[in-house]
Length: 579
Image 1 (cartoon, helix red, strand yellow):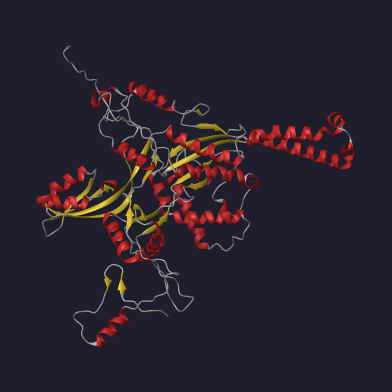
Image 2: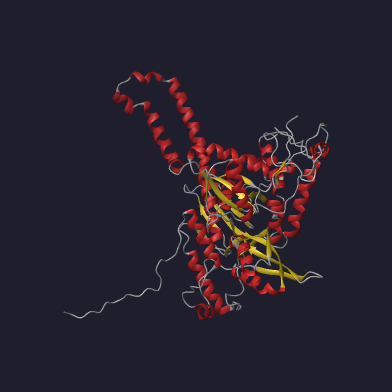
C-alpha cells in the first residue's frame, strides 16, 4: 500500500536501537512502528484508515496549545517562492499545532503556539521542508476590540457622584462631537444614518454581551458555521432533509443556552431575533433585528420556514448583514476584530425606496407603451428635421430625459446594495465609538515551579510584564512552590529566558494560551473629575497600557497615530555680548 517509514515529527528518525543487535528484534520493532506513505494529498494532520467502509472515524487528538503567535514568511530570493509554499504545506501536515494562512495582502503567515514553538517551526522550515533561506517578520500579536458598561468609579477608585457626573457627561459630549454631521446620536447610544441617496434610514445600537454568552459563541463556532450552511442551502432551494437529528438537537441546545444567559428586560426576545453572527458569520458577535417592517432570524434554518417578506427583501437584507460582517471584522480602534458585542437594528425605514421602486415601475410601463407606439407608427422616420422636433417623434428624447433624471439618485452613489453595506458598516462603527471602548488581550496561563529562595524574583518578573498571580501552593514533601499566573501574550517574548536568568535556572515556566481578557484601562482616557486632576495632573502623561498596545498595532498597520514627537518643550535663548 505504500512505503514503510519509521520516523517521528518530534524525535526525528528512530534509527537502530543501541541495545538490540539481532535481526529478529529489529524485525519486531519494524512491525511495531509501521508507516504508510503516499497519503500526503489525502490526509491533513490526522485521519482514520480502515479496510472497512463502515468503520466509524476516531476522534482526533485535542491539544491544549492553541496557535496564537503569527509571523509573515517570505524567501530571500523571490524565485524560491514555490519551494517555500511546498515547505509550508509539508510543515502544516507534520505539525498538528501549526496553521498556514495566506492573507488578503498575499503574505504567507505562519501561526504557532508560542515563542519556542515558533523558533522550532522556522528551523524545520529552513532545514527540513523548504531548505531555503527565509525572511521572517516581527511576531504579530492579535488583539480584540469590545465595549463595556459605563464605569461607576473614576481612575482614582472614587465613586462618580452627581457633581462628578457633570464632568463625565461633558467629556462624553465632546467625544460625540467628533462624529460627522448628518449622523444623529440619541440617548442610549442609538445611531441613525441615512444612505447617500436618501432612500433608506438605519438605526443601530451597540450593547456589550455577557461573558458567558461570548464564551458559548466561541465554543459553538463549528455549529454556527453548520447553521449558516443550512440557511444558504434553504435560500438556494436545495433539499435540507438530510440534516441529522443529532445536529438538530445541538442547534436547539445551543439556542437554549443563549436564552438561559440572555435574560432581563433589555434582552427580551433577543435570541429569537438574532439575524447573523460575525465576523465571518461564525464569530462571537451577534446582529439582532428588532425592525417591525422586516423580520428575519437564523433560526428559520432548522424549521425550514421563511416569510414572503424575507424572500422579497433578501438581497437588501444580505447587504445589511454584509455591512455588519465588515464592521465586526475591523473595529474603529485599531482595525482588529470585535468580540462580545451585540448590534441591535432598531429601525430600517425603506418607505422612500419602495416609493421610488413603484415610480420606476410605473415609468417602465409608460416607456413600454411608448415603445409599442413607436413600433406601430414608424412613418415619421421619413419626415424632415423640423417636423421631428415639433411632431410626435419627440417621445424618445423625453423618455431619455426622464430616465436620466430618475437614475441620477442612485447612479451617482453607486448601486443601492453597496450604499446599504457602507451605511450599515459606518453606523456600527459610530455606535461603538459612543460607548466605552476597550482592548482585549490574548492571555497565557503560566505554570511556574520554583523554590522558596527565588519566589520574590519570580514575582518581580511577573509584575514587570503585567502578569497576575492567581494561585500559589506548596508541593507536599518538597520545598517547591507551584505558581499559577496569567500573562499577556504581547509581554511573553523573552519571558522564559529572563525568569531563568533571574532565578539561576531554579524556576521554569510553562505557557499555554488560555483566554481573552479585557484590559481595564481606557485607551482614550483623559482626566475629568477633580480627584483625577489632583492625582494624575492635567497632562496625565503616565503610561497607559491599552494606549501603548493600540498605538503599536496602528503603527504596524500604517494607520494614523495621535502622538507628539516633542512635548513640554521650552524655547531657548542664546545670550551673547554685543560687539
